[in-house]
Length: 257
Image: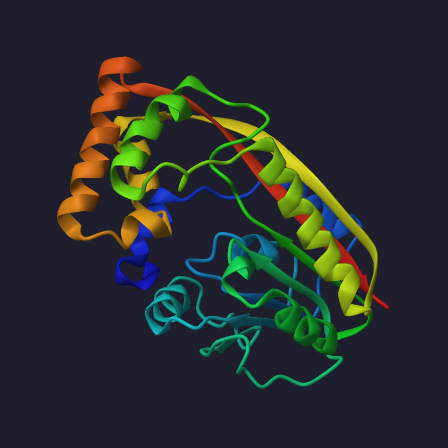
């Protein structure tokens, strides 16, 4: 899906808050020479920051050959410091108890959670760390007029509840993530925090962002174009061509027992 146009996807999506990498360094022990695996690196938003902080060897597990090809062309192998495994995480063959750190940035929700966590635990050394995070481009605890006025467009395409993101759902999502980590029996020092930040976007930038979301990208072309045209019209006519968008980055870490 996202590999059809990796360059457009890369332009549309944001990087992650600096706090993520501070925690990876100070809590999770990321340092020069750390053996790290990353699930679903995509276009390398997190990958470049991991490399900048010394990750290596860094094993990139990417199921989409087009994304892997794009990322390899951008970062190369750094003299053997970067290794590519082009396969679904569930099927990739990696040695057990080898890695100091495993991460997944905006990718882990595509996997069967408990099954994937068991494999994560197997790959990590005792005392190694696991971290996962993603950007939500709305915040149930900071509702905005833009998201409210966007709902008729969503209802027209998806029905009445497809885009709803309530406080109750946000709390349930956190409980479910924590319970999954606890249920595996291999993790301790389990932690969760929500990183909140804001960006201001113009019409075209916001259309590009929404067009990169999976539920929009997979619409029939005419429906997708109609939806994105509606988004642009909403921004231009109701928000004078500019929207302040709250973003929340749920961030989970856990230590391998």
